[in-house]
Image 1 (cartoon, rainbow, N blue to C red):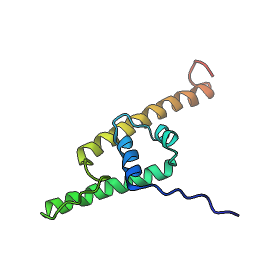
Image 2: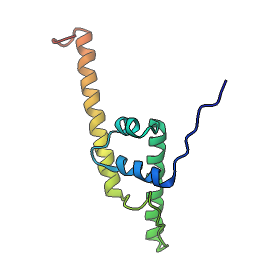
Image 3: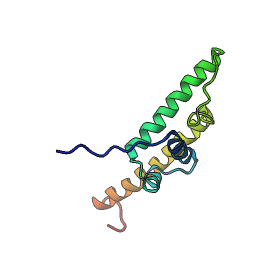
Image 4: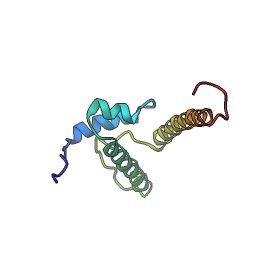
Amino acid sequence: MSKPKTTRYTPEQKAQVLKMLAAPDANILDISGKTGVSVPTLYTWRKEVQEAAGREEVRHEKGEEKTNHPVYDNVGLEKRVRLLEAELARKNEIIAELSVLVLQNHGLLKGKK
């Protein structure tokens, strides 16, 4: 069995993709399709940025010097909260739509099947 192909991305490419992810209306599936970066990789990158932002906050509170890394600049807690709220809202819409379809399929809700 052959090993899956691994693509390496430059820090600049990664930063550009992460900027796209940080947009309030960002859709991870769309970004994956546009960039060719897999969805699991995008989630991993986003998690790394969020964790790094948390570490930077702690370092800043302790009075330590901040790291000037292109991926971690401009990633604050307020932005993180907005992204999470938008993602949660999208998931809630999907759950509501799926719930209607399930109820319709089981004949518990009148409408199209």
